[in-house]
Length: 218
Ligand code: FE
Ligand code: FE
Ligand code: ZN
Image: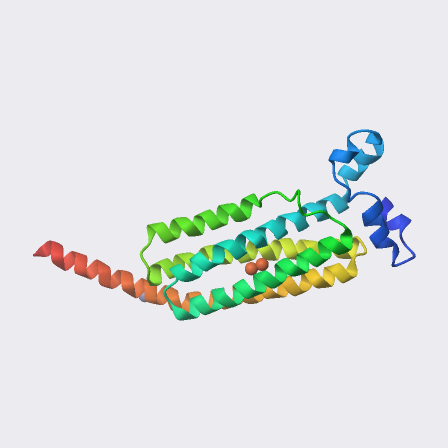
């Protein structure tokens, strides 16, 4: 509860932007030279955690904008395509939202690294597309990886929301909340779809299994 950040800016609500501009949000390269002692403490700040999270979700969303069209094309059920297509539009809005936030906080996005967890999940989706033929089974597998993606985003936006409150960045917290709600909604719709599609996938397997059996008998 009592950290220096909170203590130094307890009064004026408009101080927060200056804090971000003046101190911890400058890049690491320029900090290597002169003010090592000060910068060290900044390295270890909650603002730094916040900045890293923001950059991670930003590149993650960008990767998703690139990756989702292929996943949509690989889906069989129209309902699944629709949910994914709608969420692609959400995702594009989320990218714009984040870019606004970077501008407000004067954070450069150019040094944002690739999001390894998101890259891993996207690779998983691509593997599923290669491994399973178009149809309900592939759809089920795609829903699972899509939900993993949503859960990753929910964890990240939820944490950004929480940290924004602690860092007195309430307006930015509200923006994070909007994206958080979209991720939750997408996750819920995928859960509903899974009930229907898993059952189709299950029956599809049964049929497959029966025909295999009968053909091996004759
Ligand atoms: Fe997203
Ligand atoms: Fe999402
Ligand atoms: Zn069944």
